[in-house]
Length: 252
Image (cartoon, rainbow, N blue to C red; front, side, top):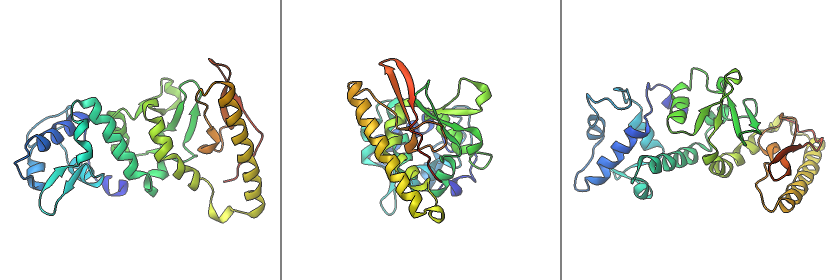
């Protein structure tokens, strides 16, 4: 999907999609064709943009807009999120992540090579080079919807995943990252055994730390990043961060 969408100049902003979806939803007696949807913002400027070439295509691809064979309607699961722009933004990111979780092009961006874990902000850090020029419109979409924000340390040239979406990311994207981090060609039996032992040790530490800190959230960094230098980010005390490094080598 992202490879198809990279041809577009603009994939949309929260205000654009809020106005679009409210217009379609609130006019229940109207029948919206593709031409009707595209003409809705003709000669209009939203968030400084007047070109909306990729927005409708994106909305259809991630199933926010559905086609009944002739006309388009708003996905019913989106109805309760149209009370405010902020509610709509969160729902949009959910639909986006779920739609992209199996996409190879998406995982070419969110892969271990470009990901790290920021202990200070307790979230993922993704290098700007992951997007390159090819996916700059997708990067802008994530920024506009608040899914990622520019890292406060400019020298890092990276972005931080909004902690508000971390659980969503863990549930939808993380399992695929884990599956893809080990190349099939390099999957030797001896390495497989070593990895199993390593994961068992990490599970033990995760359970121990969760109980010790009364279910405070502990980050199992090694699940999604193999070159961070430690496996589990935990705490000496409730507010004192430290890292568990089990000295287990992960092979990719």
